[in-house]
Amino acid sequence: MIPRLAADLVLVLHATFVVFVVVGGWLVLRWPKVSWIHVPAAIWGALVELANWTCPLTPLEIYFRRLAGQAGYSGGFIEHYVGSVLYPAGLTPGIRVALGVAVVAVNAAAYGIVIRKRRMEG
Image (cartoon, rainbow, N blue to C red; front, top):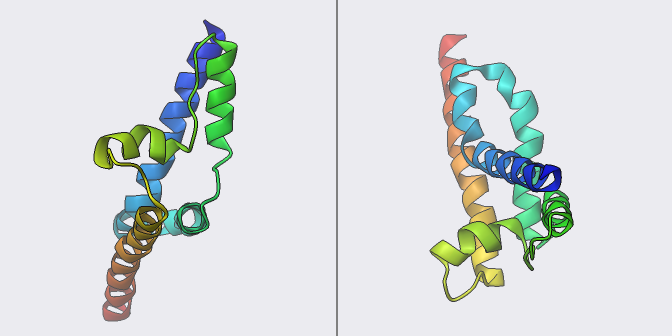
């Protein structure tokens, strides 16, 4: 039971991290100090997608799933949980690059607004 809970906890942590990477730049509008955490997280998230790396949380979750007697899965977190729903034909390298570019674009827009807002204030 403990390994299953650990796997589920890693899953929730991983999903939360992915959401933070994608939309965390918008939190900076309200809480500017979040940028100190978000910028490195966003860089990491974009690099994982663009370079086709495996996030260390993926093998950790799979380890706990197998320890709990579950099958685990092959591929990455995005491919398994998001890709299978959004991309039934598979998460191709082109789609991975598009996701990485989307992370950069969404956050560039948010930080562009943050910078413009700061310039107008001071």
